Amino acid sequence: MLGLSSTAEAVYTAMLADSSADLEALITATEQDERAVRAGLDELAELAFVRPSRDLPGAFRAIKPEVALDLMMRRQEAELARKTQELAAKKAAAAAAVAEYGRASSGSPDSGTERLIGLDAIGAKLEILAKEAQSECLSVMPGGAQSAASLEDSRPLDLAALERGLDVQTLYQDSVRNDAPTYDYARWLTDLGGQVRTAPLLPPRMIIVDRQTVLVPIDPANTKAGALCTSEQAIVASLLAVYEQAWASAVPLAADRARDVDSGLSASEREILLLLAQGMTDEAAAKRLGLGLRTVSRQMAGLMERLDASSRFEAGLKAAQRGWL
Image (cartoon, rainbow, N blue to C red; front, side, top):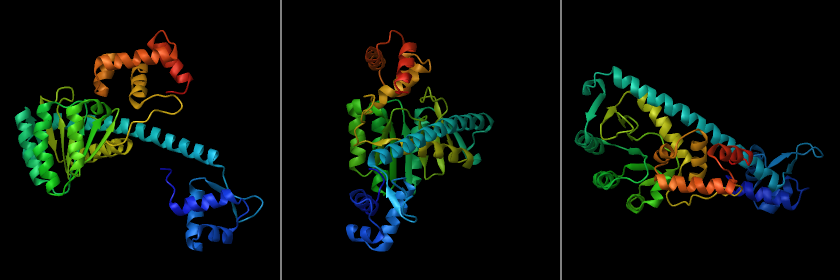
């Protein structure tokens, strides 16, 4: 979980047990050869678990676990914040690129782009893409609970892809964990070898096949209106980058969404605070998170009570002061 190899962990443990241990002592204590111990020291140095000794030139000293782990967590938090900012920027750029190309494109199949009007046209295109797929199918399914019709239409396509040995990856919002039909479908998918992850916030709905073709709604707010299917390299690459960052920050379906040990906030509560602090209404926040309006209102009321705040603005200020945001 900490990202340390077993060898590096053994070397670090030995150094904590004996602060004066030299290379020979570490080799003896870890029962590893010199090459493995040196590699472990290099790994520990890179992660700042050890630092050069001032007393013994050429030697290392172990950093106390509470200090080393705190530094590691801070680095990971900073990296996550950077990836989140990159994801937001790429989402905006990708959405703009798709919109611009959609306006400029003739929409003919020969141009590499098709406009699919209506659910039947989308379903027919998905059937073709699933049949022609060679290696993988990546999808983002925002909005929380999926409709029964959508799940029913997806089942034979996912089953056929998995039976052919394709890599099937699906991103849902965290709120699907509270919807039995969608959660059962996701479990069914993972039992057959598919991969499912969830996150509080997701990019717009998309399906990427073999990293060559992408299907996105013409209007993300009304997915029934139609979709744009394109193989334009620039658009596919942009949306693929958005997908990969969203996938990297999501958690596997089997993992529990743990609460922050310092604030006691769940992932959805933190996102609700962030969205409402940005001025979103309960209705808009609920739509973004794929949650019911009552759920968002109830969670926000609970957060305001914990913060002893009389308004959303005051709640945002107090949350920031406590380091929750």
